[in-house]
Image (tube, rainbow, N blue to C red; front, side):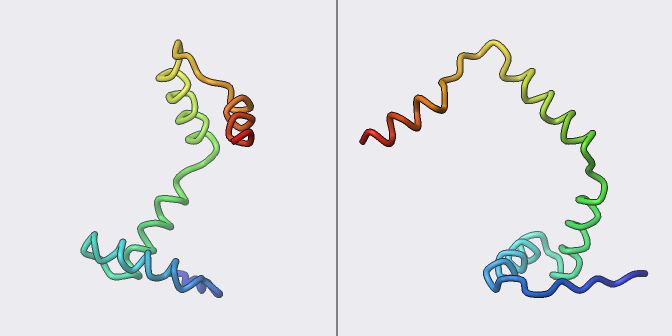
Length: 76
């Protein structure tokens, strides 16, 4: 089996990953392995399928214009 070394991770990232692993009852190594295995299965096709599902779910709803919201926020 291959090994991977990730350098220069921020301490906060490692802390969050350790907490995530602990909450799932895994070691940090097992959690990282699971994250990487899942990430390797996702591709652009999956992302497009997810985006299509979201668009279908939101179809017909009225959405505000983000430019209007930004202008309103800046005017404050």
